[in-house]
Length: 108
Image 1 (cartoon, helix red, strand yellow):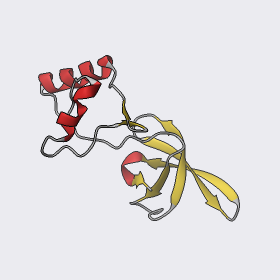
Image 2 (image 1 turned 90 degrees about the vertical axis):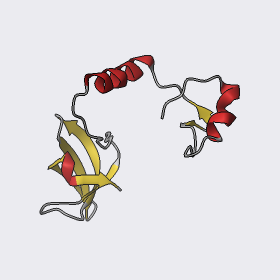
Image 3 (image 1 turned 60 degrees about the vertical axis):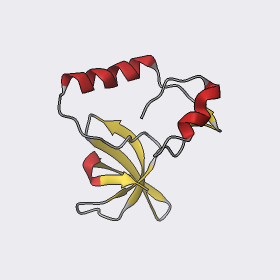
């Protein structure tokens, strides 16, 4: 749920059934940029089919959950295209990189 409120109105939002917290940094709410909200509205208005997708960024720790490397942990070095990641996997104080499908990992 998104809300557009003044800071002093946040208690009424937090008292709303189902609301757990307001996202932010160190307890301070951070506004979602207008451009991002406009994009979300446009997707919803067009009724185009969409699915939630994990937000993976470079440096995040992940675990491979499918395929021949299932169970291997690593760190995202590079996001390559829409569905490919380069992971760094530490092995005996060495690092190797492997390209994996983004659908085969989850955040550690």
